Length: 368
Image (cartoon, rainbow, N blue to C red; front, side, top):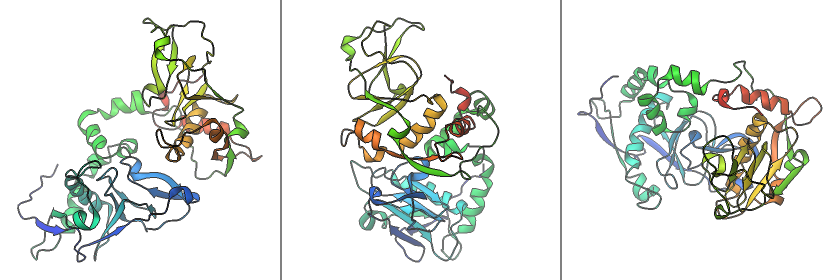
């Protein structure tokens, strides 16, 4: 790796309009926007900052998005037109195309500066703090920012960066660094991350339509509620009943209970949703539930179709903040999901299954 020599670097203020264009995002609420294929960029530090897809963009592609509140310092290069939400600023450079290489160099510097701020502590306010931030950057002999240096330096790293799979890059800077430092790529790709089916199946050339969840999932009910104090932990071995609660860890399973004759024992092959936490998982084995768990069943459920539906349901979670607005049984039934359709205009569950089998990590998804 090429070593950085910073002794001749200059100091440049982020709010200096001779070098940077910094603009706030829009305060328009996501719930008031129409769905579409334009990335909606918010303060999340995952998935390149994208939390939804809407119909209209308010920024052209080729910009940096930076969260100045919320997950402060979540910073990404946005190559395509996108919608910049509230608490996001977009950053462009003056008199030069902001390439991906230059953007990645700047993002690394911005992340270093963001460490001085936090959501519950010191704020990175736009006018008083962010625009006054001084960035140490490569400089030319005449004292201007040396974008050629950034371009060339980042280009020399491309061999390492392109070794990082997209699913790690999407998780953010820290995960990408961990991957480079800790993982043997060949072993990981073969044993854990390979698809079950290596053929190419795309979603971009499919026809899609909206369907109410109750139109194709015929059983949505509240699980029989148990408390952990009512249960006996299972002994080591394969004989157990999963206890599903509202935790967001371990597939929603808080403990493994003795396989007794429980009232309300649920058979495996169902989706569970914690109504006050919007925690959503597929349960492969028989289970019982804690308080506030809703169970979904359909004849076409298997682990692959369920994973597809859960991915879409997770896109609805922003409507139901934890211990705020509950994702009740009635609201679940009325939820509209945008699904691929077959030639008859019905949800194409076979396609959903085949698509999931081509995704990374699907080699470790066990079919029912």
